[in-house]
Image 1 (cartoon, rainbow, N blue to C red):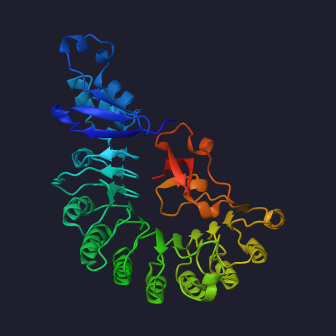
Image 2: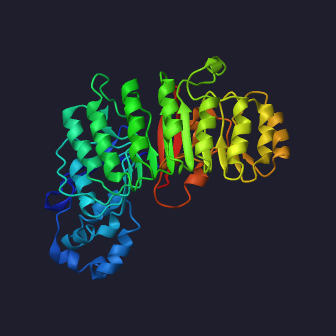
Image 3: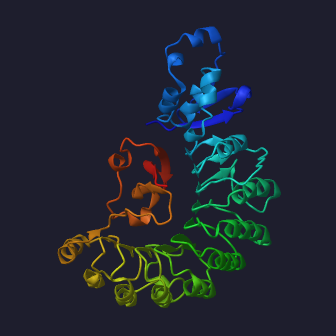
Length: 433
């Protein structure tokens, strides 16, 4: 499958001009909208089909081909506006006009993903509250920059999109370069978003934010105060995260959480032992969290500062609930892992793989035969599953999804060419929401 990006200019309604396809990084071709000749179209075989059949055919097409089909005739263009075609709109690595975003929202879209997409400059006129349930903005960009909610022009557009929703169930945020001197603009936006969706939002992926201590602290308070129905959350602990922020989260997060992911961005294999001198997410924080949130089924603590002292706490509080656990790149020693055999429901354990541990892995598999090791098969609060060799380089010892697993002849599967540490490779993505 070739890398395909699409740029759509005025592609809706009578002003539709063209669809521009890029089939490679250097080659582009422009497809002009064909002139509609009514006398010829009416006699074609496809025009003899009833609207119901044409609509059914269109449901098997992706967004670009639906739009191209709308260029065949006025009748088919009208059918392409049917709300059932836009209930789930996945725009993966596309250049998207704000007018098109409004179009899909006006046509009843409930699942909208803009991963790796770029939003074009323009005006976003949203006239009502929309019934979006799943909104994925992960890795979404505004023209050439990551979304910056403190810049007035971008603030208005993205704020309108976020605050037009009042029944979100799942939300994945982009990287937001909040102004470190004035975080109030970002806080105002998310206070409104969390207030409007607090009773419905169950899944939150906060993305990988570089924020000031004050902004992180205030955002933690907003999450804890307003999102009491959360079942699934992903947070990235920044390099300079204060103990107070972590303490507040673990002491106040809703006890209804069932899937929890908190990664420490300071951690790496190079300084694996250096970080256990204190700071970040530690054993004491985990004990407080688990003592309150004992319904957790999936727990990702990869790259945090926990040690062997956390193993008995995990067993004690989550013995009868935990199904998946990730402790790769932590301070937990390999010999301690055998204690997890006491957990009757644990079926996946990601512990990473260091040089020379192959024999230890084989031995561990015999001691906990009902638990699969290093599958890297769960993405908490994340709308996509991806090949871990590219997306999760610190879990390179795992046996994650492959091309065959992701490309299962279903819709919403994508392949891109990416660069990782100077090497070009293929990364596979599949939309999960």
